[in-house]
Structure formats: C-alpha cells, structure tokens
Length: 265
Image (cartoon, rainbow, N blue to C red; front, side, top):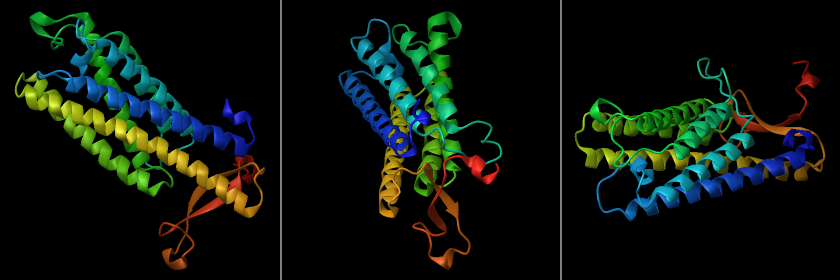
C-alpha cells in the first residue's frame, strides 16, 4: 500500500496510520476500564463480553478497536527487525497481526454467562474457543514484545518492550493459574485487567514511537535539504562510544538509500 509512495510520503502516511492506531487502542482501553467499573462484582475481563452481560456490546467494540488499531500500528512498524536469533524468524508486525486475528475471533465468539472454565461439567465449545484464542492472542502479543526487546535501534522501545513482555507474561500467567485453580478469583480478575492494561499501553507506546521516528526522519530530511530522496532513517551502531556521534550513547541516525540493492544486498 504505502510502499509505492515516495519515501517522504510513505513515512508521513505510516506515521498517521500509527497515530490513528494509537487513538483506537486508547479508546479500547478506556471502554474496557469504563465497562469494568460499572460492574460491582468480581469478574474477569472476558466476562464483560459474556452472553447476557450489559457490557457485552461494549466489550465487543473494544476488541474490534484493538484489532483495527493494532493492525494499523503493525503496518506502520512492519520494517522493525530483531537481532535475536530465536526471535527473528518473522517480523514483530507478523506477531501483532496474528494476535489481532485471534482477538477478532474472540470478539465474535464470546464466552457464556459467567465465563466458566472450558473443562469439566461446565464445558462448552463456545467457552473453549474464546478462552483458547484469548490466550493465544496474549501469547502473540508477548512474543511481539520480546521481539521488540531486541529490535535494531529504538533503545527506549527495547527496554520498555522487555519490561512489558515480562510483566504481561508474569501477571497474566498468575491470573490464569488462579482461575484454573478456582482460587483467589478476586485477585486473578484484577491481575487480568492489569495485564490487559500493560499490553495495550505497550501497543500505544509502540505506535507513538513510530510516529516520533517518522517525524524525526522528516525533520532530518528538511534539515539536509533533500525531502524528496528515497531514503530511510535507520540507526547504525558506532564504535567507539566516545566518538560522540550518536544521540543515545553509541547509536547515530544516518540516511541510507531506500533500495537496499544499492549496497548489493
């Protein structure tokens, strides 16, 4: 889509798509919190969309906003690559799109009343599908966070992604274990809401960082007087660190040709 545009126009469009994605994700988070605060009893986030709940349609809308917003942010960040051998089989954007696909299914197949666990006498295929895709969606999001923890450049994003990935995995995992054990569901429900909040906050930060990078690239091109060149803003490690060439210790922003074939790659 945007790859057929000139570099400057492509970056501008990608930045606007990322900004729109951030707005949609933020709206989804507000809806989830607003819906949760209207329910006085203890409940997990998925129960907001359970059959018969007054918050069901709001929950469905929130998940759809996450799907659209996350997909837009993934598109804007499709060029992010990771350097970790075990994580670079595919781009973080692919992981985000996979997670969004699972959330799309979860928005259409919500759990039954009270969201019983899909095993034992209370088993239903509806609950099994919803629970399974929700878990897989969180797993895909955590994988994307780990991938971004080793992304080329984006130092601040790397640190935040690592912290977020660990936090979401630990908090959501603990909440899931409590749910399976049918113990401490009041604590487990809070943990699930916290994990959801962290995950959506990370997605918003990812989108915000892409907007910032696009803006920095445009300003840099204007500064060198070549706004129409087909170039990308990348981060290249510089050694030694005391060369003082970078804005962040040993990293420096450089303009490279958009077409990597110019380097014979």
